[in-house]
Image (cartoon, rainbow, N blue to C red; front, side, top):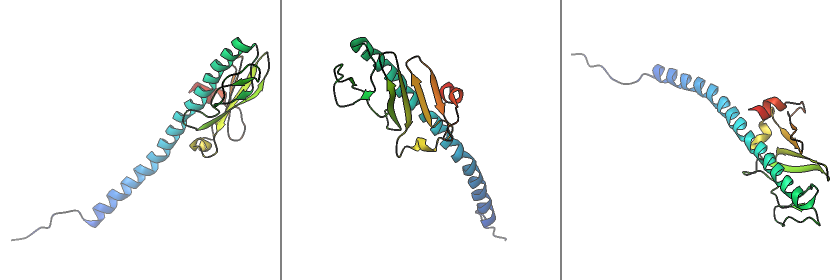
Length: 150
C-alpha cells in the first residue's frame, strides 16, 4: 500500500503568498487615494459652513469679518465671529484671508499633521462671498473643477 501525504507544498504556499502580495500592492494605494478623496469633503464643508456663518454675521453687523474665534462669542464691536478654525476632524485649518463690508475670501489648507498633506491634487481650497470656488494642487496649479466637482 502506498501512503500519500496530504497538505500544501512549499511551492503552492509561495505562489499563494506572491499572488496575495501582488493584489495588496494594487489595492492599498487605490484605497489610500480613495480615503484622501473622501476627506476632501471636510475642507469643502467647513468653507460652506463658514459662508453661512459670514452671512449671518453680515445680517447682524453690516460687515463681514476676518476674525474667527471658536471660544469667544460673536461680537460686532470687535468684529469677531464664533467659528472653529479647524474642520470637523481637524484635517483642515480654516482662515479668512480678507474681509470688509463688501465681501470676504477664505481658505482651507491641510492642518499640520493631517493625512490630507499627501493629497497633492487638492491641497488648498478657497471660497469667496460671491460663491467663487477655487482649489490648488501642491504645486500651486489651479484645479478647481477636479476638487470642487467630485
